[in-house]
Image (cartoon, rainbow, N blue to C red; front, top):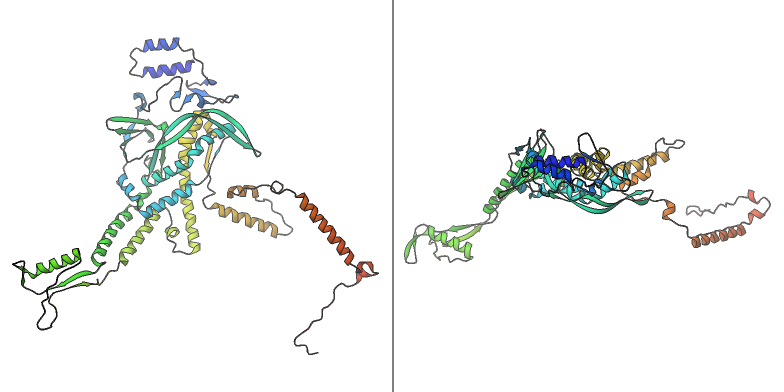
Length: 534
């Protein structure tokens, strides 16, 4: 163990309340500090360990435990913070007046769910690119992250659109990988060995019992989950934290569902009133006619009102009823009768108009033009509004790039190659899938038409066809690589050409006559006309 690691151990021991005799511990560590580091290293001015990639292929992730320093020094496995790590932190609360449970109820609304799925599906399928001057760094980081990209984007967007933020706990493991890089069509192995790999991101439900803490810079510093009487704290470097539409240094962002809350709430009430209206007027109502007075029922005098109600109830419940046979002496019509009457007004147009308006506004709250889903506009208007949707999607891609780069890409690179390596690391999500494929295709076609139509002119800048096909996702290859010469077919075609030339030479008799070349080979055909009587 070198001097730097000894100092780190002593510093942790000095702040550990479980070590009562620090002098004895210091003496013990000094006597037994003869271990050698497994990677090449150097000590900087701040007494921190910095690592460099060696020629023999070793990287920092072979021996360093993510988030806990060297595995030879610190053996802590739990995520609980020490007392000195919690200084200068204070708990922060979500100031949104709409509870998270309400947002969860809104997520099952058909139109809100459709808008959410449209945005998530539009962005989650985009490809990404990781670039670095060192091909080893680029290949290793790409191999570790690529299996988590789709799930990361989906969880970030789904929870971010719903609650305004999303977070998850990073779970690390050490595993063997073989990373390759492609140059001139050939794959070369750039690294083969152990790395500090991201096993998964455990995305958490913010509706559970969580406490959130921020530091003096209003950045999230740790998350504490309370389970019964146990409090488990997860530090910031163990968390993936995504904030949607951040405003005023809030770590909770802004939910897209918040803008749709009013329309969702009143559409829910309007739907209940509409169902009650249908219950009252949607089906025919029962009308009972009966004479005034009383009648004998089961040996007792009972009002005709009660008898009529019993008759109606019996018909509705049992489907049958017994009607008295009394007849009016004057009109000779039955004095007792039951009849179903059709409702006079059962129109639901007012309810349906409002519900359609509310559905449009729910979609617009997500930044999606309603005509894209409703389809009641012409082609040019829909095309223009589609461009607005793509602009909104690009803004979400920018926010995703920043969060993924900070919490995942940079951390993977730092754990395996050291923190200095992230300065030249670039992470981008390909936006060409956001409707630009059609634009690139149309642009290339127009350029080619202009270039071939202008006779006597040439273009100073010519579009790179291969790069254009790459952006469109169309594989390309050379003509010689795609087609090979068929010797048998080639010989057969040559024999046919020779036979045809020989036949043409034998049929051309005018060429052998004197002055045959000057003789006209065209002859006028006799024109038989239906109107020519001569």
